[in-house]
Length: 389
Image (cartoon, rainbow, N blue to C red; front, side, top):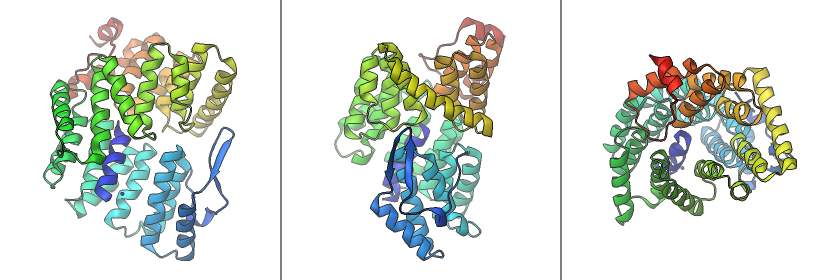
């Protein structure tokens, strides 16, 4: 939920491990999003921005415009190299960065799962400008991803006091998804969506997606599916809701529906994993083998290079596709050190049990107690509970 939150609200507020690529190395003919056998060139507008940064290397405004465009294009294409390139474009200005530059580079760090690095930059930004709504939202988002809901709520409250009570409320709602207050949040979200004029139209997708996630967490699968479909229809680029819906369809063994749902999605790791699982359901061994080969290539490279940003996807791959629960557990433990969302908690539990070492899932129970997490759909086997005693 974390990155998606910042994306939706960030556009309203601003009106707005991968290798870095310096601006001087970016060329108009460069091909990006080289995922499997498909590729596309930079959009013309982005090409023009990059030419401007090369022609005027000391122009901070041009650099920030190019960095923002790189981040947006990288997210849309699912290409972390482009997002990382934004950091390279801004690097010459990081000796004496302004607040917006700090925010942009923090966004890159967040996308790369360098959450501590992002927090350090955001702390600097907020120290300089305590009323910086973008930085406050991004910091709250990261704290939510890290499972520090108490800290996130502090920044959400600050947002509510900055004449943006709508964003502050949605921020608070996101931070409360995994708590006993989720039902209260659900009821308030429904009333707000049903009352014209209470919510900025650009935030409707965020609110609707939250309702879908609450329904999923509470086991109301029909309602969750309906909400996710609603978000996707309004925003075909809403990848998180698309992946969450795909998981619900996989649970129902609806392989063909999953493949249709993901047919236009970027070939990021999460999409490929779900395509493999769906292809296996319908017996399409050719597609399953093709995507499995690509996933194995990516993940082996990550392991060789010591990269950790995709540890969640790696753990799921080794557990559900490669059939290697020991390696799956190792990656799930790495992932748990990085982030504490619902998916991360369930994944560590599942991997620990599959590997025959339920004690490795005890950190999840400690976090549940520390942050007062209450989620009906979180599966905790007796073996894990006994290991915690």
